[in-house]
Amino acid sequence: MYTYYTKSLIFISQLLGAKSNDEIRTLVDSEEFAFRFDAGVTMPSTSVTLENKEEVAGALAMHYLVYSCKGKLDQFKQGLSCLGMLELARRHPQLMRPLFLSSGKVKLTASKFLNLFKVCWSPMGSNRKDREDDVIYAWTEYVHSCDGKCCIRINFV
Image (cartoon, rainbow, N blue to C red; front, side, top):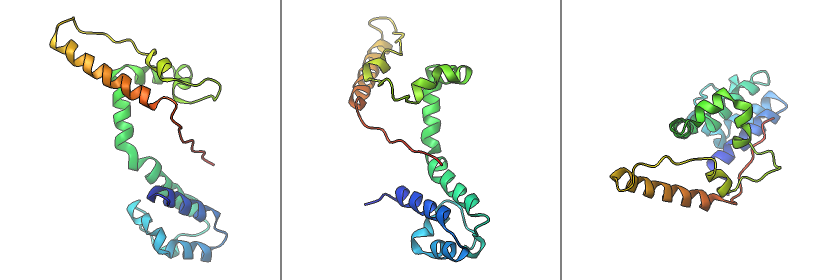
């Protein structure tokens, strides 16, 4: 069973593969293609042609791959900012690239990932230290629970 997003990406691919305006019209008029309205593509089906199908497909793809997860991406950036990682990535993109993109040569394990960070603890016995202990414990457990999990690679043409 395909997810809503997977179906949307399949239809975007079909739109890009269409060879005639009639094929595009049939596809865009189908009930399965109604998701285009969710993505803000409200032009009539007769307006989608061979000449502008890439533009329409691009708008649909941007909606589903970027705009629909913008809140999550912003939250990720905020998390990177509080650790100083976002600024490092902006200043030294080539140096930081291996942390965010797999070369396929070296596997990033949970232990290797956790060793990238140094915790600056509050004084022993303080309320902050107790909370930090809880947060670091939960963070470490979460990272270890992700270790060895498969990631999905998306290739853009």
